[in-house]
Amino acid sequence: MSWLVSLLVLSGLIFFHELGHYLMARAQGVYVEVFSIGFGKKLFSFHKFNTEWSISAIPLGGYVKMKGQDDSDPSKKSYDADSYNTKTPTQKILILLAGPAANFVLAFILYFFIALGSPNVLSPVIGSVVKDSPAFVAGLESNDTVTAINGVAVDSWKDMAKIIAASEGTLDLTIQRAGYLEQKLLTPRLQTTTNMFGEEVSRKMIGISSAGVTHKMELGVSETFSYATEQTIFASTMIFTGVKKLLFGEVPAKDLGGVISIVKITSDATAAGWMSVLFFAALISVNLGVLNLLPIPALDGGHIMFNLYELIFRKEASEQIVVNLTIGGWVILFGLMGLGLFNDITRLVG
Image 1 (cartoon, rainbow, N blue to C red):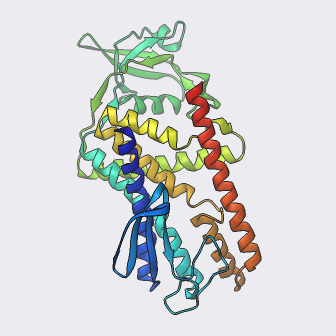
Image 2 (image 1 turned 90 degrees about the vertical axis):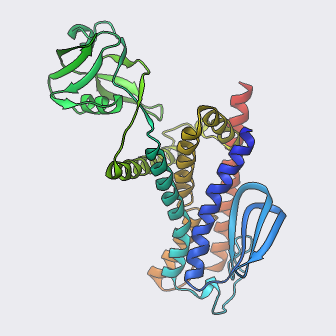
Image 3 (image 1 turned 30 degrees about the vertical axis):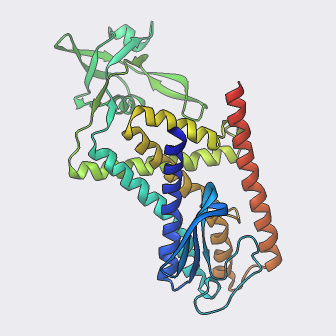
């Protein structure tokens, strides 16, 4: 079942990405020859809107083949009026940006539906207190609920952590214990911890852990839009940062995952319910958008790079350079895919 859900999720995200390219290409007057989900041998195809729509055997991507554009042989060009090659660099950049943009829009839509479903959020309920920590000295105990800090209401563990991390000086915590409200004064202490990328960072903390209690978020119309926007921006920033850290060696290459990891996480998300599947789908959608913007010639970002060169210098990049860089781009992509698969298998064996 997890394989089927993974396939449907990936295929849906790829479809929206390629649909972005397709719609923008048609809007710019470019003839789209093929719209394919997957690579390799065609399993099913039909013609509609003067385009061949197909599903191919290898479901690890997709493509929109426009007249005059062929990544397998960049030297093949057409200069007919409805060809990609006859469009201005700006028009081509718009076509190329439309795919990643579709992924970001889809992520926003998914987060919007998640917000409508009242997603669970971690409650500010204390699970354990570290001995001799500021919280321990102040008298905080397990099962205490933090309701406010310095008079500012706290609705979630995330909100509480943000206030503590950004605090200056002593904090006045309002806690609920056994049905009664109490005030506790404490001063956060700068401590070393790890962030989501496994890096050591210094952060102000008070020495408590979560009890794992959750509650549903009840959001109004404006709050729903804000939630979707914030989550899309957060996911985009997180993935951009992760890619940067991976490229600069700040995150070990062994942390890179491949298709097996996607299937495993999708399986876990499926078991947890539709909300988790939507969260994961939104995150992968943003991931697709970000990765396709990388300046690798085989990706949208690489083609954008060539068109920016043409826009700035008023001439196309050398055909031989384009061919060589495109081949290099494919080598990089297959290398990354192979590394991700190797890491997945290593984790499974381990």
